[in-house]
Image 1 (cartoon, rainbow, N blue to C red):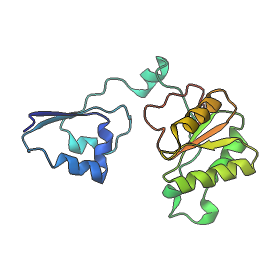
Image 2 (image 1 turned 45 degrees about the vertical axis):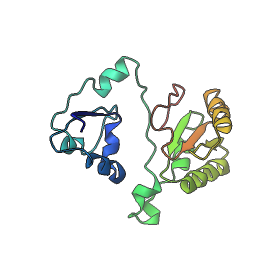
Image 3 (image 1 turned 90 degrees about the vertical axis):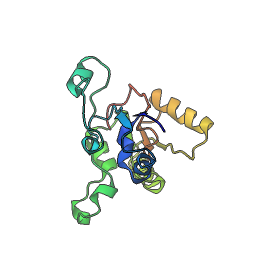
Image 4 (image 1 turned 90 degrees about the horizontal axis):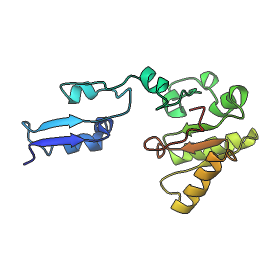
Length: 171
């Protein structure tokens, strides 16, 4: 019987599981969503109004976010391409950003582990942090990354929200 619902991290409502949560509320329930994700896909279809508090350029100038380099999307997004057209993200990092702190996202743990093996093959220190990583090990790996003892931190979206790593230069 809620009259007003506030969705934090509203960009998650685009996923099927979260969409089902919308169905439990009456059609006349007032809803508003908050999201700091600048490109949130189809949120305009879920909410009738959109207010932009700050643009990316403003956040960069204010020092709230850092400029990053995007090396290349994961294999998940490249599935339809011929093998010869695919880009090896670890090799791209090695050729253009070696020595810089990088955060690398993959959609699955298996792909994270494959990426780590590729970085290691190239002589780049890399660590995988997942939801299955114990809190103690996770803290050690994050500290190693912040201390620049690990160059690349790889995660299946675990670190995509609420993770602060000002030392990261490449995404």
